[in-house]
Length: 122
Image (cartoon, rainbow, N blue to C red; front, side, top):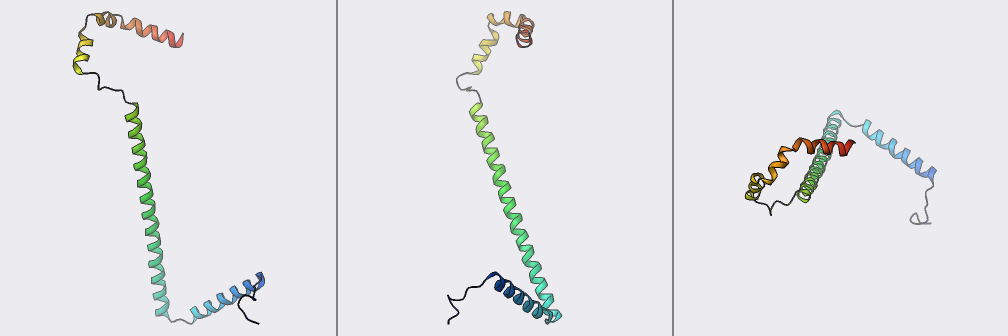
């Protein structure tokens, strides 16, 4: 009988295998000298630092991309909601201010403010 496809491990066999592997690895670590253990700890420490550096870089990249996207959305909203000033020139503004028809409006400005307040709250 071949071990290949005919061998199916049940849960108990898998647990037993995992315990045996763990025990064998623990025994092999116990037999290592101090210099080798020190080297393993250094390598492990460097690996952990590199993993932390990668996650920080990824976080920085994602936060930068999110900030850029927010600025772009804000800029587009401002551009879409800004009034079209291309048709009005400063001379047109000067004409509006200096015309005598608008002087009556400025003289009764307090009345118009009161009327607006009454319409809103009254």
